[in-house]
Amino acid sequence: MTMLSVYLRSSLFFAGQFLATLLIGPAMLMLKPFRFETRYAAANLWVRFCLWLLQAVCGLRYQVHGLENIPARNGVVICKHQSAFETIALQAIFPPVVFILKQELLRIPIWGWAMATQEPIAIDRQAKAQALKQILRDGAARIQAGRWVVLFPEGTRVAPGQKGQYGGSGGMLAHRAACPVVPVAHNAGEYWAKNGFLKFPGVIQVRIGPMLDAAEIGSGEVNRRAEAWIEAQMAEITGFGPYAQAASTPRETTG
Image 1 (cartoon, rainbow, N blue to C red):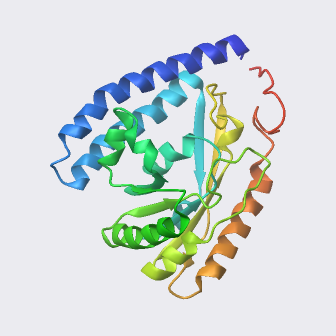
Image 2 (cartoon, helix red, strand yellow):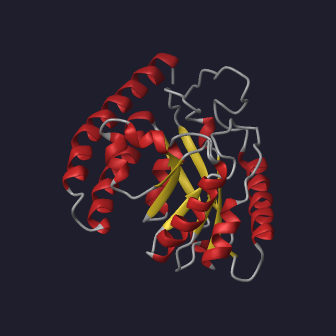
C-alpha cells in the first residue's frame, strides 16, 4: 500500500469518525436523563462503528488473545497506552468500562460533553494527592456499580519500544475494592501512533493476561506482577508494524 493510499484512507476514516461524533454525540446528551446502561449502549454504537470503519477503510484490525482470562466479576484493567486505539477497543472488549482522564478533555465540544455522560473519573493531574484520593473513592464506587475501571499505569501514551514509569494506583484501587485485576498488552502504537493521523493496515495484537486477585495479594504485588506480565508480552509483540521503531520515520508498506 502506497503512502498516498494511507493518507487518503486515514482522511476518510477521520471524516467518518467526525461525522459519527456529530451524530451520536448530541444523541448521548439527549439521553443524559436516562439510565447509565442506555447511555452506554448509545456510546457503544460509536465504538463499534469506529472499529468497523478502521478495518473497512484503513485495513487495520485487531486480534484478542486471552479472552478466557476475563473473570465473571468486573474489576480493574491495567493496560499499556500507546495510541487512541485502545481507548476505543477496550470499550468493546470489557463493557461497560469507565476511564480515568484529564478534566480538560470533558470541555472538548460534543465529544467531551458526550464523554461526560459515561461517568468517567475526571481528575486534575496537577493535584496529584487529591487525584489519587478521587481515583480510589470514585473508582471503588464505579466497580461496585458493575463497571470496569481502566487505568493506564504509565500515565500517558508511550511510543513503541519505550517504557514509562508505572504508577501504583491500579493495585491500590483493586485492593481497596477487593476486586480482580486484568493486565492488557498490545502493539497498537505500531500502526496508529501517539497523536498520529495515519493509520497503517495490519493486525494489532491485544493480549489479556491471567487475572490477579487483589483480595488475596497486596497492592504492591499486584502492580509488580501486572507490570512484569505486560512488559514481557510487549517484548514478544513489538517490532512488527510501521511505527515499530519509536525514533524512526514510518516506512512505506507494500501489499
